[in-house]
Every structure is written in C-alpha cells, then in structure tokens.
Length: 253
Length: 102
Image 1 (cartoon, helix red, strand yellow):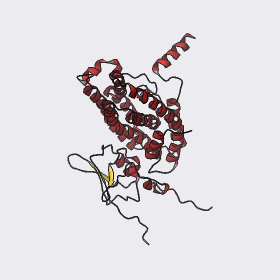
Image 2 (cartoon, rainbow over the protein chains, first blue to last red):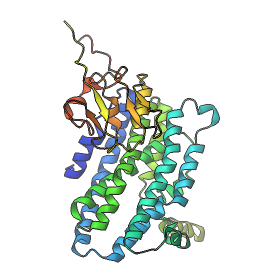
Image 3 (cartoon, one colour):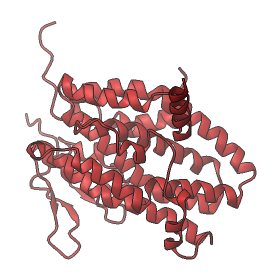
Image 4 (cartoon, chains in turn purple, yellow):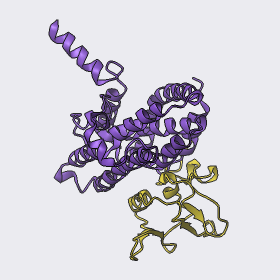
C-alpha cells in the first residue's frame, strides 16, 4: 500500500518514536497496522475535499465545519464524554490506572477548550455574537456519527483501556485531517481554527499511545482495545441515521 | 573507560509547552521523577537535572505533543518531535534485554 506523504510524515514523527519497549509497544504496533489503511484512506479523502473547498471556500462551508467541531467538542458533549470515561475505572482499579485517570480528568478541560476554540472562530467570523446562542442550536449540540464520542459515551465496553483505541485511532485521524486542511486551504479563519486545535488533538493521540505502551501488557487487556477498534472500524453504520434506518428495517421484517 | 553519556541539560520552553503533563506522567512511570512542578504561582512544569538522565533517557520527548517545547539548554536544539538520533531502538525505556546466544 502506498502511503500518502502526510500520513508517512505523521507516522515517522509521532507514532514510531517511543520511550517504552515490551508487550504494550509490540501490541500498539499491531494496532497501528490496523489503523494505517483507514488513516491512509481518510487522508486521501481529506485531500480531495480540501482541494475542492480551496477552489470555492464559502462562509457556509466554514460555518458547518466549525459547528460540527463544536458539536463534537463543545462543553455539553465534552463533559458527558469525559465524565463517562472517568467512571469506566472502578474504585478498586483506581490505583492501578491512576495515570490514566489523571489524564482523563485533565481531558475534561482539554475537550471544553476545543469547544472554546471553535466558538472563537464562530465569534471572529461573525456567525454568532455570543457563545450562549449556540445553546439554542441542536446542530451545535448533537453529532450523528455512531462511533464518535457522543454515542460511544454509551459504548458498553467497561474495560478501562477500551478508550485507548478510540484515542489512538480517532485522534490520529483528527491530526491527519487537520494537517491536510492546513496544507491545502488558504482561508485565514479556517487556518486559525485548525492551528488552534492541532496540539490538543495530538495530546489526546499521545494519551492513547501511552496507555497502550504502558498498560496493554496482557492478552486480556489487549483484547479490550482490539474489541473497541473492531467497533470503531465497523463499516455497517457510518452515521446515526443509517443505523436507525437499519433498525427500522429490522423491526419491519 | 567511562561509558556514561555526557550530561546535557534540557529545559521546558514555556512559550511552547501546553502544560498537558504527559512528560510528568511518563517520567514518573519510569520512576525517575525528574519532571517537577514549580511551587510558584503558575505551577509550571520544570526539569530537575539532578534526576534527569538525558540523553540516557528520552522518554518525555517521545510523548510530548507540543512541538519545540523541550530544548537542549546549550545548543537550543528542539527535541520535540524527537530527532531521529534520540528514538532509535536502544534509546527506548525500559531497555530490551540484550539478545544472547546466536
């Protein structure tokens, strides 16, 4: 498989350098092999979309893009997602996973910061006068992708490491998408949006990387991460609408 | 013959650092505890060079997501993302057991 140069650069810069060796690292390399085809496809699609958008960047496009970002990372969604993550570690396991809990606690703040950065773009672009206006918009507070944070807050896998796959796969995708937009788009507000988000996204990716390298040492722990990735990579229901339609079909049959 | 790597000081560039604490977490994981929190009003992260073993250990560089936030003090060399010379197999921690036999 020929890798897109943006993906290759990301792998060489942020994926392969690691401070740990042993079963966790070996397992993460296996997980990386599973992620690479999806990352590569996603990078190429993002390039295509960015090239199209660069021809006719419109305010409508930027609005929907930033709104989707806010819906995924605004305060409402962020607090829900992250508090669920904190609760996935039982009291008796807290000592074992204290680093993981610390990072998740910090991530509550990081995620809300994502929302603030998106709101900043909407304010600068004159889309809203006050962030509070977004509270009245359903589009600013819901996201219809099944495997994204909002719905995975209800994802029933209770293993403390299940989220490592989500951090690694999704946040890696986010980093790649941002890199693509920064290289192919010239809109200053879009650039501001992406630049401001990038380091936070990379932080979340690093958390997934660290969790696997350090904690995913046994077959049981690794299985939990593998299961999560199975779910995230499932092609059968890319959006909530698709899933609901399928459910209705099933009920009618 | 002294095989210890030469001691080179590193520091955190607070203009680039996002205070995400990955360096603190990973350094504590390997029990070096060389990343400390400054008790001053901002509680910034700092590197205690009495404990830090760089360039023997480079674990903080491998998980820091903020480009250019850790630098060599004298050379000014940016260590994030880690330059290729610091992330080769033998730099990983904990060290792999040396291969024996054939």
